[in-house]
Amino acid sequence: MSHVALGGSIGLVFAWLLAGGLGVPLPEDPALFAAGVIVEHGSVTPVVAFAIVLAGVLAGDAVLFFAARRLGPSAYHRKRFRRVLTPERRAKVERAFARYGGALVFFARHVTGLRAAVFAMAGIHGMRPRRFLAWDAAAACLSIPFVMTLGYFAAKHVAA
Image 1 (cartoon, one colour):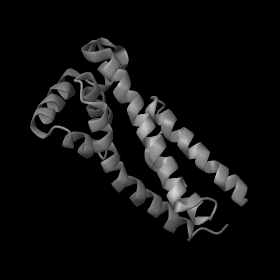
Image 2 (image 1 turned 90 degrees about the horizontal axis):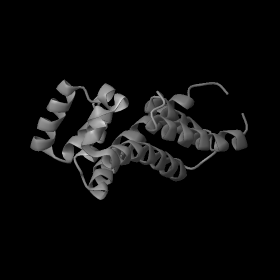
Image 3 (image 1 turned 45 degrees about the vertical axis):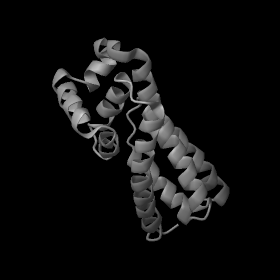
């Protein structure tokens, strides 16, 4: 595959991450892994890939947060949110927010199944956008390089 094709693929990684944030059932880790592969092939620098991936991750997360923020508590009555925030899950997350505050956003980013519920509830309950994005970005700055590095080193062991 040419460098041009792989370099253009970083845009597809961004689109994948954004679509996942919009509710398309696309897991984040394969996109981050692919970004590491693209970096290993030399099509894009690690800094550029990280910046693009971080932007895609935060944009996707922000979509859920701002949608829930805009709807406020009425979100609990919408079918899509009810699926993510069952009454039992909602009660647990509310208790965790009361105890841990914004740090829960940091933790939830790394827990499949909890992430969407916590991000939505942060918006519904009026967490300041700057605070939400700061906690989310801090967590992403740990997970993104880790998974991209896995992709980078895995690509070294695959014949082109």
